[in-house]
Length: 310
View 1 (cartoon, rainbow, N blue to C red):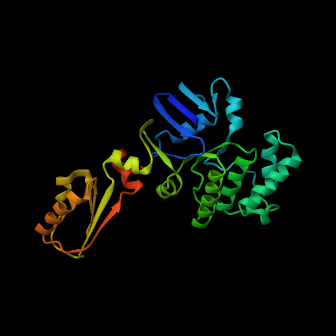
View 2: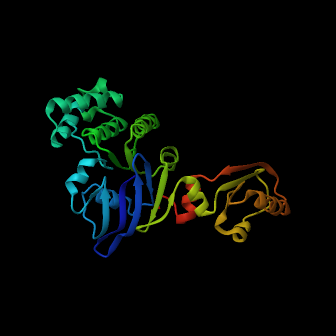
View 3: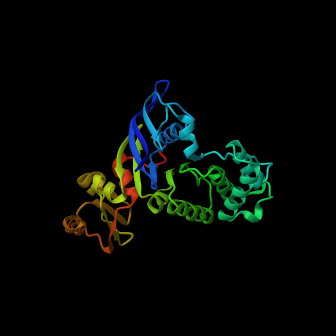
């Protein structure tokens, strides 16, 4: 069952076309990743889905409701974790959550009960009476997630939710999100961290220049990019011979540093002998060879031609 459907979504800011006809869908209970370089249209898409921004054209359906005709019904189905922290520093963790619960029309007693459960789930119950300004960045991010969950939404929209978070807090957040998915929640997730998407997301859409350029599981994206595998060859250091000309021979399939070669391939069985022959011709002493599944970063660079932070 599709819980989110987006068709032909367009949005411009003056002469800048932020979205040029975006199409994608999200299944109920899916952990869906939206990846793209800065300025690709990720946050604009999230802002439209969360009813914060109106599109110029296109259709959006959330939990069976048309966004244009029933924005209130759509809003009731979603929780939003924005890039910026939506918390009050001078209020305690518990007071913050109860405040957001009351804004959703929840009674004070129910909001308090729900807040205490969320604080325990996020391992912050011992700090419930501490002011937010005394919290670390990772703790604030976890409270931000709790605030989005206070009204029991079916869908969680998360825009860069772990920016500035230490590794331990990130792992705690991963565990909580995986628990949400097991309980049937749907999550739409944007991030700069490739490892997060590989670890968490069951399906991924790559957006670039305001358009979805590819979508599917990681294995499906590997097939689209023609980079299902990566051949990594390490050479003996301080060797005089030069293999940089291989870049012109193989193009963007190959990356070369002083003592390492990385080759993207869809057929390592055929390509490895050719590579070894080329390296041998230039008297490079090979110290290590590995064939690995292509990472999401490799696939992303192949499809977009630029790094995520460009």
